[in-house]
Every structure is written in structure tokens, then in C-alpha cells.
Image (cartoon, rainbow over all chains, first blue to last red; front, side, top):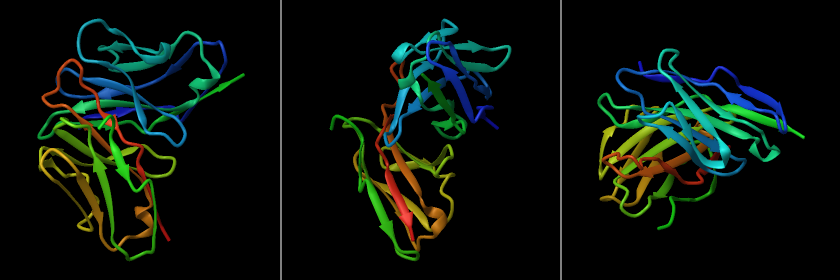
Length: 114
Length: 116
């Protein structure tokens, strides 16, 4: 079955420190991978995606993600966290077998402390 | 429209009543998706529309749930005989299809359904 896993329910980091939010995937064929962010009482916003090409993908708000095929991972990173980055982050993978949709991970809550 | 619009934004209903949730996708977006997000949980896929047909409705939890779409426009998600476990935020998203390099879902703000 095609899926994504976010092993951490919550990640805590001090403002100014680098952050990593982990995601691993299981798909057949080449993966299309996404990160979305959900701020309180707001809809999900697209951050970045990996389709093909460079393994390091840059997205919105200074976030980036590294595609690692051998480790089947797509971790979200930012060099210097801001308090305003505190939100719920979702990793997603495109599923194509008999459909065409995104399957989301369970989400990771990022808390950035001043 | 400029974004995906969902209505109502909040709905409180009594157990056993039927509810209808509406989604207006971005104009020109041929694909439309419904997801459910229970409190503190991830996004659960419900149904995918391409135009007005639904190639994948595998995520609908029971026969109390149904959805339809008019052309490449408005979609309604109907929940009959609501139960307390139906309480959740129902999110709609739309996208262009076929997927190109600019692919990405655009989500609405959701309908928060509370069954009392």
C-alpha cells in the first residue's frame, strides 16, 4: 500500500535553531511528494513539492525538503526557526493506482519557543 | 473564484439529522477532493471527482455519506442520519488535471461539523 509516515507527533525547537520535520514514504514507482502547513483555524497551505530533478527542493517561507530515495525519506527543514512557524505540518504522497489523489501523513505539530 | 469556498463554515446539528456541505472549487479546476479531519488527527481521504464523475470514492466511511458534483463546478457532500463520530472538519480541495509541473491542491477553509 502507498503511504507516508510522520513518526513525530510534535517537534519542539528554539527560535533561531534549525528545524527538521521527518517524513518517510512507501510508493511504487517514482514518488510525487508534498509538504503542507496548517495554521490554527485556517486551511492547508502548500509549502513545496518534489516531482523530479534536484533532491533539495526549496519552498515557501524559507522551508526546504530533501528527497532521499535510498532512505525513502522527504524531511522538511529550515535553517533558522521562527515563532511564527509554529503550526501543523503534513507530508503527502500522490497515489495513482486506480485513482489520482494525495494521501497525507498524520501530521507533526511544530512548536517554536522564543 | 479566487480560492476554494466552502459553506457553511460551521454547522451544529442534532444526531440523526441530515446535513449538506458545499464546496465551490477554483474556476477551471477539473479535479475536486473531499477530506475529513477529526480533532487532533490527520487528513482522511473521502472522495475524488474528475469533472462530475467520481473515479475514487473509496474513502466514504459508510452509505450514510454521499457526494455529487455538477459539471466542473460545485460539489455537495451529504451526510445522512448524522452520528457523533461524524463531528470533524470537512475539507475540500481542487486542482488542475492533468497534473503538470505546477500541480498542487488548493484547499478551502473547511466546514466544522459538530453533531450533538
